Length: 151
Image (cartoon, rainbow, N blue to C red; front, side, top):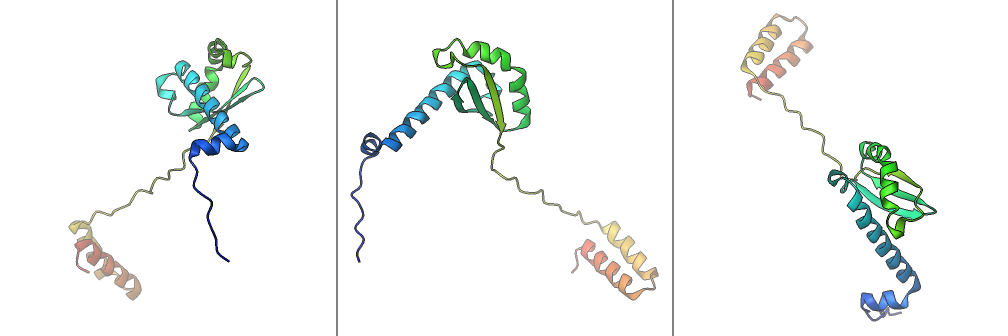
């Protein structure tokens, strides 16, 4: 059984003929327009941290990068609602909800490096010479060699 792929079509043809894609594209354009209107009223520092998720039934939903920005938006909620209601797109706006969704970028844990010290190596060696327990003595000598740089 052979597989014959469908003929490739231009994205504009797909959007024009497929109702689901057309609706999705229209919704994306609508949210993009709302985002640009909201950004005119947000303080410049908040613009990259606050994104419009949806607007329905008078509730504007934001996705914010941290609880810090969610709190700042909550403090400015009345002012934002009042200013955004001036636009016809936000005529029915009554409240703003914030959903915290931190970025998915994970920071690498800091690498801990131990500074080697000749003085520490000397102290460890002196302590090892005075210890009678063979296991502890061997461990201290190994640690002293590590600090002196000789393996």
